[in-house]
Every structure is written in structure tokens, then in C-alpha cells.
Length: 393
Length: 81
Image 1 (spheres, one colour):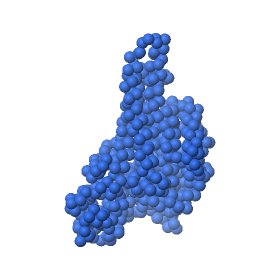
Image 2 (spheres, rainbow over the protein chains, first blue to last red):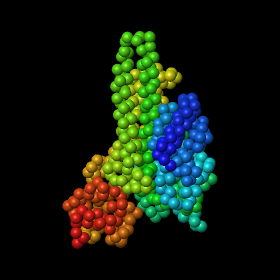
Image 3 (cartoon, one colour):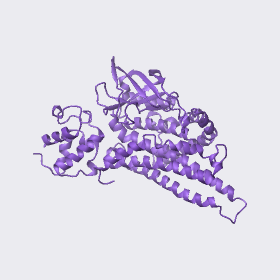
Image 4 (cartoon, chains in turn red, blue):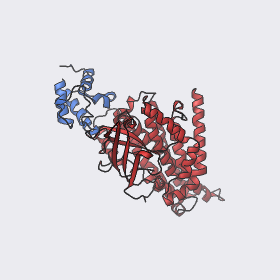
């Protein structure tokens, strides 16, 4: 396909998601947030437009759009409902990881076709009780049970939309005697696992992601272990793509908070064309904060596509690139709530209240989750040790 | 050179198994080398062999096995002795 046709397809996809964001995510966002319920309307509309398989190549029956288009879609959804955007982003992170590491594997190729046909929603089970938040280590293991089948039992402190997902992608040790860092990814279908609820879900923000804790128990054929080790799939795909898609949706939330602040300033200037309201100066400060966030997010997207040409992704495993995408995560997760808080300062009490056109409380609460999703302190620890040896950063 | 590499892995790699039992091609990550310990290992190798690994070499595949480390050091001009 020509580049022009690919661009057209990307643009059409982004327009579709923007429409869904306006028609389904926006009108339900406050209720989703208040009731901490799954954004079912948005996900239903995304399914109807085959958006859950948009990133899957056409040869597997998917939409064949680019990763930057998926990132733009996360931004558009984030502007209207942070939780909808996060569910969409997490699903796409799992799909992107499988697409990039399918490597001709028959079972996973067939699985991608299934996702495209049935618009299956995939959730991730990466964190684990007892690992101290280190995704590069697992306790639970793939345990052979004979006849080419295996089982696992994993204590997950949180699984986003675990109860609503059709499939789970889980990190596990390769075998009962494998080291904690010797991990694989396992895909299991709903009928192959059970979820035992172990915690409630009443958080500050991102309430619609419905992410309580569970014990997951599964039994499955061993073909459902992704052949690429997690050590490679993580560093070349899951980790940098998580940081990229998350930061796009955080930017979306911050952009809507800014838009509300701007609308507030404009409303207060109405009828007094000769006076620039004092809040306009605050808004000016806020523009530069938002610009910094936008610049970091878009340059990271460019750096990723530049260092991931075709199947040559080795550059992504260099320390310089690991640092680069870790820094994106830290910077965006700190800057997004800063912009939302600035928007609240512009709007004052009508921004603080939950039921005005200028409310930004949900935006602030949603973006405050950003520094906790893979805790920034842990990322700083990793960066600190990498900086001892990396030269050209 | 391989003996010296093994000795450094023994001291800094914090492996779950004795490095002397591993072949030159054995996967050190599967033997328990964590990303954190791999940084210590890289620093120790730089000191012991008086080299600096350029950024292009600072990736997982280079520190995957005794033989891949040896190849990297040879590329940096160290003789195989």
C-alpha cells in the first residue's frame, strides 16, 4: 500500500475514534467516574467500528493502522474520558506486543485473527503480589500438567477491567524451576481461567478502569505461551509502548482541562472587550506547561518510530533508549496533573466543583494515577543504575 | 580471557548457579542475571579490561553469555588471551 493510502486510513480511523469519544465517552464520563463502573458504551462503540483490531495487520484481518494513529486515538479518548482511554490503551499495548512478536507462530497468528473477527478485549496481568512492583520478576510459573497442557496461579494486586475482558495476557516464570527474571507471556481465554476477587475498587481516579485485585487460576495448552521471552518482548514492545500510549492519553486529559480553563477565561472576558481578565495571564502560564507536555509526548513517538524500523528493533534495547522512554513516563506523569491543577487554579471554585462546564476535578484525579502506574520511584531506581554505565544519553 | 570474564561474572553477576558450570553459550539471564546485576557486571568488566563499552554495545544481547561478552571485548581491541 502507498504511504498516502496508509495516511488516509490512519486519518479515517482517528476521525472515527474522535466521533466515538464525543458521542459515547463524553456524555458518560461523569457517571463512569462517580459509579466506578466500566465505560461499556464507549467500548461497545469501539467494537462496532472494529477499533479493537485496528492495529492488527490486514493479513490477520485487522485494520492495519499505525501505532502513531493508535496513540492519537488514545489522546482523543483521553480528552473525553480518561478511563475509556486507559482501557483502550491497555488493550492496544497487549495487541501491539503480540503483533510485534508473533514471529510466524501458528497459534498466535490464529489468535490475532480471532481478535479481529470477534473484537476480543485483552487485559494484562503483569504486576504480582510479592515482587515489590518489579514487572521484570515473577513468582507464579507456567506449571506443566501433562498432555501438552499447563496451569498457573497468580496473585494480582490489580487487573484493570479483569472482569470485563475476554482474554488475559499474563507474565509468568517460564517453568517452576526458572529464575524470577526468566519470564514468558501467556494468553488465556475467559473459559480457561477463573478470577477470585481479593480486593475492592474505590480509588481516587481512573475509576472506570475497574481494577481490583484477583487471584487468577488458569489451565491452558502450552501453545498459548508466546515464543518470544518477556525479557525481549518487554523491552522492545510492552514497556516503551505502554509509556507512549499512556502519555498520549494523559496529554488528552490535560488538554481538556486546559480547554475548560480557556473557556472559563473567555466567558469571564465576555462583554468587556477592552479588559484582559487577570485569569488570562494564568492561562498564558498554563499554555507553556501544556506545550512542554505536548512536545515530550510527540518527540517520544517520533523517537520510537525512528528506532523501530520493520523488524529491526535492537536499538530499543540499548540503555539510551530504555532511559529515553522511562523519562517520557516520568515527565508526562508529573506534568499532566500539573497542567490539570493549573487549570483548576484558573477556574477557581467552578473548576473545583464537580457539576459545572468548567469542572476539572476528574481530570486532576485521573492524572494523579499516572505517577503510580509503574511507580516513578522504581523507574528512577532503574535509571539511576543505567546512568552509571550509559554514555550518550 | 574467558576465565577472567567468568571470574567477574562470579563476583558481580549474582547468578543463581555457579558460573563454572555454565557453557560459554549459556544464557546468563536464564541463569538469574537481573538487569540490575547486569549493570554491576558491565561496570566491573569496564574496570577489569580497561575499556568503555560504547552505547551501541550496552544492550541485552551483548551480555547474554560468556562468549558474547568475549566477542564484545575483542571488538574493543582486547586480545583473546
